[in-house]
Length: 116
Length: 234
Image (spheres, rainbow over the protein chains, first blue to last red):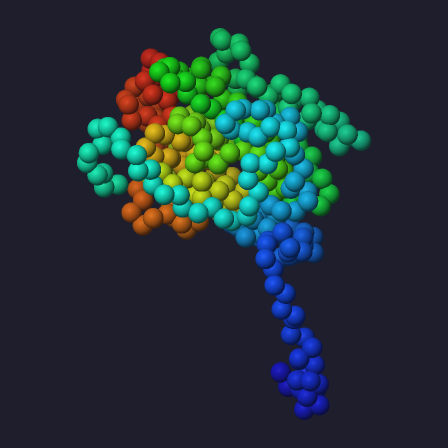
């Protein structure tokens, strides 16, 4: 905090170079794989229960597009309407689950709106 | 060397992941634990390994402990973030499942049944969702569980999404129903991470009560059940 005027000047001069480039990222897939990880690649945090491996939601979502996450699971049973065949991926998009419109088809015996 | 052994063991057990057809099967506490999963270099290990199960109740068929057990189908296991996404990307979202389908994601070694030793003193938070919310809430739910966002130590057993005719239900199971600090914390975390509409109703139910009410139509997972089983009712 008590840097000499010379040092302060040096910092001030160096500053423009340290401002990071602005990079437009259009898809989370363009993020570097190690974005927001610690050098070990894992986020650790100490909690009352001891040291546990904790991941934030955004970090998990980013991992979705990493090459390792694209390895098809071994021996995935094919259940029609539940799992995809072979290497077909059902959905790969990241963080884009929008609210779907409520079912509007009329259902018999449902004349009263329930206040849940 | 030991990793090689594990690798092949894992392949072997995945092959017979379907439920046995042994009709007289009781809940086996002695079921052989599945071998540990391998986490490859570069993958992000999770605090726990998990199993994904699927079940669908046949329409009109009465659910009993036995056929509930037999309907449970192991879809896969994962121990890292990457393995999770590998499976999840091959599963349809809850919004596209047919009615009476359930997806269960439970910690390795805990069966998604009340009778499992990890569950028998436990209970679950029940969140009823109007149609249209399930896919997003379920994904948030899983990510919070896998990322250890609940901060309740070992208490979480797993989570279930139940697709029903007019609503979808997310349940989070924990080990100790009487532990109000834990259940309170789970509720608060659910409220925070699920991004629920403000008027969403949440209800806690002990598995013991679920067993007692198996007869009543309000039972979420198993409608009219077998005669009450006194072993679990004290």
